[in-house]
Amino acid sequence: MCRPDLQFAADNCRRAVGLLALMLMIVPSVHGAGEPENRNGLSLHGEFAIGKEGRLILIPVELDGQVYRFLLDTGACRSGFDTSLRDALGEQQGTQWLQTPAGRKRVPTYDWPEATFKGQSLKRDRPVICLDFADLRQGSSEQIVGVIGMDVMRDCRLQINFDRGQARFLKSLPARREELGVRIPIEFSVDGAPHVVGVIAENVSERFLIDTGAQGNSLRSELFDQLLEQNLVEMGGAFTNATVGGEVQGNRGRLLKLSVGSDTQERLRVARINLSSLGLRYLSRFQVTFDFPGSAVYLRKGEHYAKSEPRATSGLTLGWIDGQVVVGHVKDGGPAATAGMRSNDILVQVNGKSTSDYDHFSLRQLLTSEAGRKVSVRFRRAEREFDAELTLHQE
Image (cartoon, rainbow, N blue to C red; front, side, top):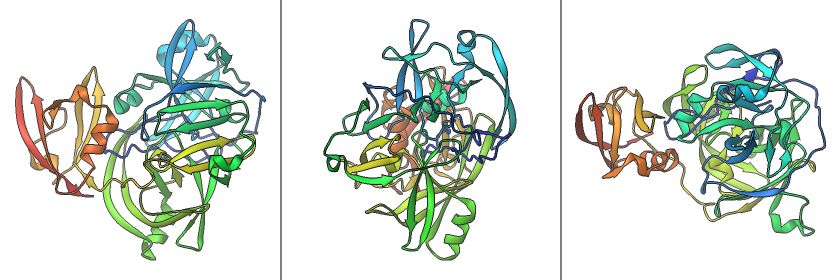
C-alpha cells in the first residue's frame, strides 16, 4: 500500500494523508497502486546534501539544463512532475484517476522526460503523472516541483544521515553490515511500497509503510480505535491539514509502545488516518540505510535518537505564499484564537525574529515544543500590525 494523500483509485491501493506534524499544511506526495511490479534494474550512486534533523529530503534533479528540487519519497509508488514542467514532458500519454482525501481527481500521464541525477538517467518504464504541487510548496516553504518515488528507488541502496545532513546512493553495502546497525526486513506491497513489521504492546503486529515523504507517523483508523479501547493509545487533539484535494480533518494520539526490530519507542505521536506509517520524525532518530534490492533497512541510533515528540499546539495552520507566512486555519479556543489571530493574517515575526529566518521545520519545532511555553508573535492584517503572545496548549 502506498502512502496517503494521493492514490490511484483505479487500483486497490488506499491512501491517507502524509502529515507535517507542526499543524502546518500537509506536504502532498504522489502515490500509485496495485500495478504489477515492473523493475528496470537501474541503480543510482552519488551523494547530495539534505536538511538536518528530519527535514524533508530533497534531491537535485536536472532537466533541460536546469536543476530542480524534488521530494524523495519512499511512500510514493510513482514519480510526479509539477504542472510548471509540463512542456518538458512532451506528448500526453493518457490519464489516471487519483483518490485524494477530499475526493477523486483525474490527472494526465506522460512518458518519462530526460531527467537525471548527477548525470544518471532517472527514466523508468512506468509513466509519470503531472499535477499542481503549489500546496506542497506552500506547506513546506521549499520550491519543490516534483516527487521521486519507488519506481526510481526500488533497485537502489540509499543511506540517510540526518545528523550530518547527507544522503547518498550506494553502489554496494559495506562488507561489515553490522556497522550499519540493526537489520529490519522490508516487505513490498504489489505496487512496490516498502513496509516493516512493528509490534505494538508486545502482541499486536502491524505493517507500517516507510514514508520519507511525510514527517509524522500514523495508524490506520480501525487499529487506532481498537488500541484506544485497550488503553494502548491516548487520544490527543484534532488536526486540520490542506492537501492537493482540499482540507482534511482528523485526530491524533499517543501510541504507548512500538517495537521495530530490537528498538522500542514509547508515546509516539500518531495520526488516525487510513494507513499505518512511519515518517521522518521516527526515521530521523537513526542513520538509515535502505537496501531495497536486499529487502532490508538498517537502523543505527543517531544523535537525536532520544528527542522528544511534539507535545503542544499553537492552534494554527500556516502556509508559505509569495514569500509570506500566511495563517490558514485557526482552531476555535486554541492559543492563536485566544490571541486574536484570524485566517489570512500574515505572520511577520516570531519571538522577535522575522519569519524569513525560519523554515517550516524550525517553526514547527517551536510551535509544538512544550505546553505552557509563551511565544510572542507579530502579525499583519490589512495595513495594520499587531503584537500578541501565544501560550501553547497541551495537544
